[in-house]
Every structure is written in C-alpha cells, then in structure tokens.
Image (cartoon, rainbow, N blue to C red; front, side, top):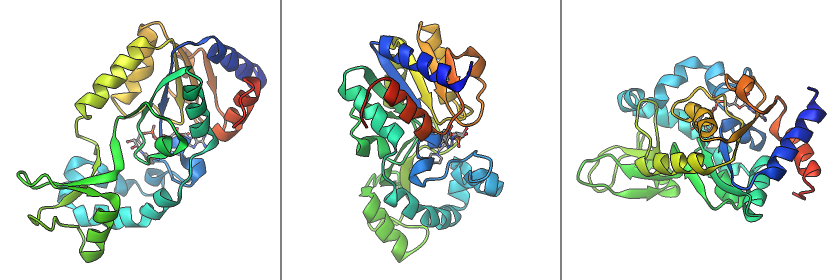
Length: 256
Ligand code: CNA
C-alpha cells in the first residue's frame, strides 16, 4: 500500500473510532529538539552506548555524578522544547472527545504543555524530584533540583543530605502502580490504539499494542523505523511524525 492510501486508511479508522488511546514514545518529541534513545544517528545511546548504564537503577546509584553531568548537558533541550504538531494533534482529538487517554513513555511534559488532560506517564516525569533518604521524603521542583546541582554534584537534600533523584523510572525499576493500572484500564476500553514515535522495545509498554488488540482494538503505528508490531497493525506508516500528522489532520479536516 502506498503512503497516501495508508494515510487515507488511518484517517478512516480514526474517523470510525469512538474511544481512542495513544501510546507515545521519544520519537514524538525529536522534532522539538529532544533526542530519543535509539534513532540511528541522533539517538543518545546510538551515539554513546556507555550512557545506557546511567539510566539503570544500579548505574544511577553507583555513578550519580555521571548521571547528573550528562543530565546537565541535556536539560536545556528539555527546557527549550515546545510541543510538536503530533502533540497538538492528540490534544485536539481529546478536546473533540474522541481520544480518551495518552499513555506516554516520555518524561518531557510536552503532552501537558500541548493541552492534553488525561495523560498516563508510565516512566514518571522530569518536572519533580525527591529525596532518596528513607525517612525524609522531601519533594523538589525541577528548578529546586537544578539549584541544588549548582551547589554540588550529585545534588544532596538540604534537610538530610541524602541523594536527590528525579521522579523518573530508571531501567530496572517497577512502573508507578497507579500509572500502570490506568494504562491497562484504558487499553482494555479502547477501540483504537495509535502508537506514535516508539521503538516498542521497552517493556511493559512494548506489550501494550498486543494488550489493546486482545481487547478488540485496532492498531495504527506511526514511526520512522520499523517495529515488531508493524505486521500486526491495521496500518503502519514509516514517516516523520510531523509529516504524517499534517497529512492525517488534512484528511480529517482538523486545523492545528
Ligand atoms: P526509542 O527507543 O528511542 O525509540 C524512538 C523511536 O521513535 C525510534 O524507533 C525512531 O525511529 C522513532 N522516531 C524518532 N524520531 C521520529 C520522528 N520525527 N517521527 C517518527 N518517528 C520517530 O524511544 P521509546 O520511547 O520507544 O523508548 C522508551 C524510552 C525512551 C523511555 O524510557 C523514555 O523515557 C525514553 N526517552 C524519553 C525522552 C522524552 O521524554 N522525550 C527522550 C529520550 C528517551
């Protein structure tokens, strides 16, 4: 099927859907200037596989300074990022009552900034941080955490001197229970899952297309690189998201 036919088919599936859910990954934010992990040239881990360890629970605890040094280089990209066309597309579909939930693996807060309301952050978010001291439990805003990193690396809690960590899920850690429960509930109730910008290799998110399909949902995947679900999708589109979304929005007569 050529690309125009795929867009037409995806648009008609979206038109028919009454309870759509989207699963998004780092690829939805690359056009906003935030690199993903696995894109061939710009992916953070493709460029430097050694950085992968820093994002594991063990790696973070054994080299928190290395984590924060790398994080400090990346932070301006997150702070300067603005929602992309694809983020805006999803918030418009929610405002129209069609999209019920965005399940995101991202930590960048761009769905919130695009105006989406019902968002499940599977891997937490960068906007807050917490003290790792058992009894302390002090919470920090991103700005407060950044201020502490200016004092010393790694940043330490001013109250109890334990390490401060962002409220994100590191590899090896369990997902936040409530987020996972809400994601499963949404997947069980949707008639269409639209996957955008995910390599679908990180579990348990990578199982979510299959879970939605087991509950009878249709599946559309938009991603630059192939995914292991492409052959099971009703439509898969290998285009940059901004290009695909512009075409889809036109077909659906949505102004972004
Ligand atoms: P990933 O494994 O890096 O895959 C991203 C996918 O997006 C790749 O398959 C790319 O081909 C595709 N892609 C990249 N740019 C585009 C584009 N413009 N249009 C269409 N497709 C594109 O990332 P996943 O999200 O699948 O993996 C989950 C990890 C990545 C989670 O733990 C995230 O927290 C983590 N992550 C998040 C961010 C963020 O919050 N923006 C950034 C980097 C990594």
